[in-house]
Length: 316
Image (cartoon, rainbow, N blue to C red; front, top):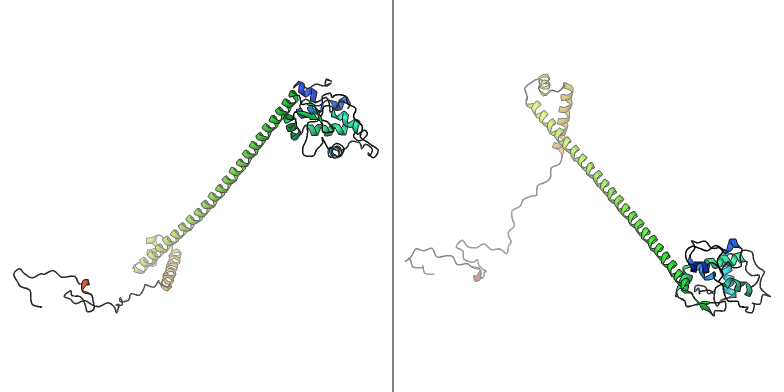
């Protein structure tokens, strides 16, 4: 088995998996980074020499320099549909890049094919297929040797690592969403509390204003009554109350205006009391407690006999 000129420090499977896809490329293109996924390992081990019949290339267009991965994939699906099936990746034969160049010479550059195979063999779908499959597949869709346990274990380890990263990322997203939700709810509660406090402050201010206005009204009314009942002169009354004559005149004028306004204000009407109307069906009962005319006898309650003992009943 050929060894990678730049072996990765992780495992022998990584060394094998990194040496096939770049076998015929320059040294700068053949060595895969040590941190890459083991999925590309499927393309980096030597293969059995085979000389299948080359694909007829009479109508094959000339090679296009550096095809994009999507264009390279479409061309491979067209040429080798048995192994490059869209949506259903299969474990590729080791050193399959050399087979592609033999079967389709001049169609792909080494760089374009290497880039595509690297992307293809490091996808999560390909890793799942490599971890679950028993055999690798050649360009004709036929088994091309079993999948090594090291390669299968490397793919399973990489899948587990990706799954852990995915779960960690999802957990971080959920925590961020929960934190944002809590902050939004806290902001809403704070806004509601601020609105409630502002409403209560406005209500308290209005209540204090009404109370102060009522107190001032009562004081002006009391001042007017005292001024109208006093025999003191205006100067002496001002000295008694501790007011200047201008303040007294203004307070009295306002008090008279208040009294006139209250006198002209409509008073609430009291409900008119009327004598209870007698129901014509109701009949007055005799004073002796006997039932009235037309009243059934069962409705009459017998009065207790209050005659002294020994006195006979009067005849009816």
